[in-house]
Length: 127
Image 1 (tube, rainbow, N blue to C red):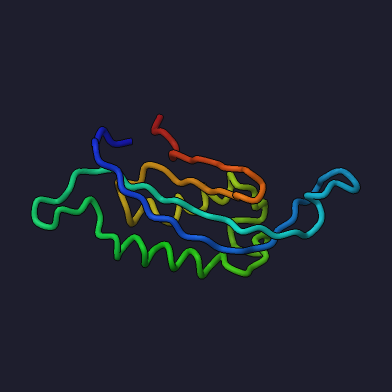
Image 2 (cartoon, rainbow, N blue to C red):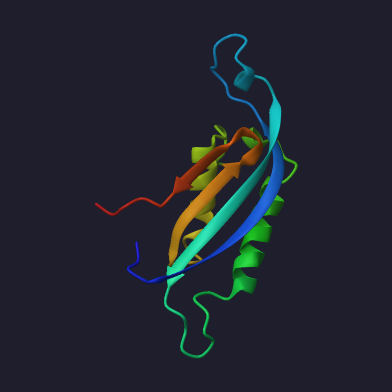
């Protein structure tokens, strides 16, 4: 995690279906269902002296668009790495794909507004 005072963020959305194996008989999460998801990606850092940017938003938008393409109108259980597509696992999935490209990545937030649910992931701390 950075001590930088500046943080920028970009949000993208997608619609997808999922289900959860191993739920008790009749549990609504065991049935196939869908949501509108919103993902906010935050990058911490200091603005570059030349550009004034922490990160060029065009790069961040492109990366978000690539992830959106992987997730939108899909059955999340079939997306590699998302066999258990909880908010928590979606947040970690996004992190794992963006962290190598954006070293200042400090937070991934996944929301399902219709359910009033949010997960915030701040990455794993080194041990």
